[in-house]
Image: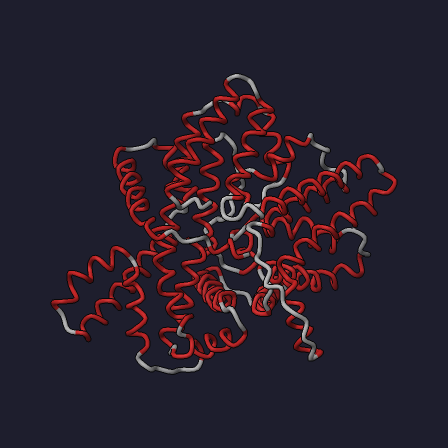
Length: 495
């Protein structure tokens, strides 16, 4: 089920909110958690009910390992390793089986059959979430919660499919706080505001850039230099508005239930270095890799003399895993390595920029991010090479004029052009599309340099909800609902 669908907004969400607060009103607290989990299973299985067997199996196995760690403390390390391996194998089978078979066939000239396994939704996210809990159990920094709490922790539908990656100590204490089980109009209002702002990011902005990006990458063989840069820049905008929009909606939904989820995006395109960028972009994933891979590798069990060497090797390992986590393709691995190189460059301070030229470090970071996002978007090595060649080897074929016409898929543009096109020449039409494209980029840039959704919410709480802002939110929401005639999935559902 998608947040940006009328069925979710007008059917599923009202039902789960009414059921949740009704059960809590009658002090059926465990029943409320079970109801929330059941509704989350409905949400998850809406696309494909068969996915539920994978999710339920993963939950039962991980909860069993948590119990065994508590029961057999002397063998906790072995139990943890087996549990960790089981999670990695589950993720590896569904996400990487065909990738490994493909590469084995290419290297050894073999002919093993591909299974073309359909990736279960959210498997990367709920697997990492449970790995974090299992690791904390092994480190003895987490309790063995009762099964109902654990079930609700893993399945809570706002963050189940694409994050943020929530830690057990962030959500289960909130489940136990009975004051949070009462309806809170202030939290609900804040949740609605965040949800609408996130929905607008996705439906109005990200989906608009998607027309241009898909058009450019689908015609990668004809792309020229200006079009390549606009396509790469368009994806840089699309990915941010799509994923941060999802996370804003998730946080908004959490507030509707009185639960605070971690903020996943903190204006990442305002960063002045790649390490800063990763503290702002997909923060909960960065936190996971830092807490459960980077820190243990560099600090635990490493002699002081070797820590300097490990501080160089570990970022490479972490970003390799991060790249591979995003998808079964060498382009993701290359993208991960590009982040490792930039991170080491910044950590070693090979290049210092005076504070007066701070804009230069911002521009360099954004410029580098734009290039690496083009690698991230490329589905094959051939596509990656073609987009990079297009960006850095000057070439002009006139494709840039055609690129703007991709926006004709947008409802607003389609309506405008149906009025304009009969009255102008074919050549003029291309220029109109080009101007529309530039306008969209300007609007996107203005939004990026402004306050993010959480900063807007904080400002609203400080000054109060004004009539003008209420009207704005209402108009934006109506625009989003009208634009849902062609519902699109979120980009991170693919990861």
